[in-house]
Length: 261
Image (tube, rainbow, N blue to C red; front, top):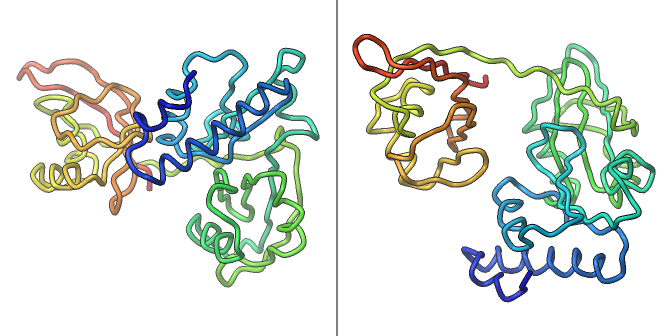
């Protein structure tokens, strides 16, 4: 562990500020032998933070449920185990907003309303919208404020309550399954097939920095994509290379791609 590595890892000044803040919080906990945590981090931010600390014992990633996209980096001393995450001392609180079934606020509506109420993005984790409810994760510091003041998302009126993390409901995403044969598992080929766009246009999205694989930015069109990888393209959405079935008789790669609707 070396604080000077921040300058090597960070790609811009915002990264430097973020990593310095995470370093100070986590190392303060380590020095005092008490729990410490970052704010919610994107996959890219979490990757940088993990690289900064290396294989340091006691560091955990947690976002409120197993497949969370936005997570905290949390230091737990030896006298605590994973039950800490579900305890009343957990740095993460899940709030459930319920609303009338005829209303259909989106993820964007909830995120916009939260940011509009003065909450910073780093204080908000995943937002899981269901048919007449939304379970979303926030830091323990802002939960009391939201319980008192967060009453609507878009035009939808909300009823808010705190729930235990083991009560969280993560709705199954709507998926369109695409079966295709490709010359290879190059990123531009997967993006082209998954979003039904020309390969040249897919390459433009990638080279312009709008694409990430499993949360990490990638601007290389010829990057080989592994089975199970999730690809996000700003302006298009998200897909997953769900399955690689092998080579066909015409020597093309048979794949199954899931597009999240």
